[in-house]
Length: 60
Image 1 (tube, rainbow, N blue to C red):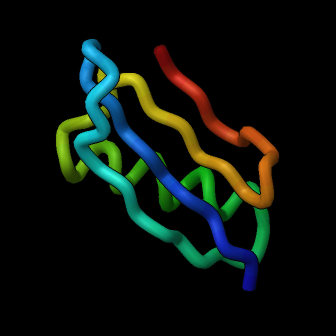
Image 2: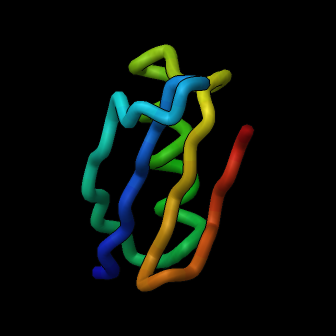
């Protein structure tokens, strides 16, 4: 399992959500991250999903 970090920001740059995700691969992590964003109503917030410095998902 790999370790990923999902982070969500307000427009003013304030971090409002951060969660560590474990997944078998990048595709699985992206699916988990998207589901968490939907569950917490953050799909339209600025967010990113990273693994060891690699940016996998980003939305402004």
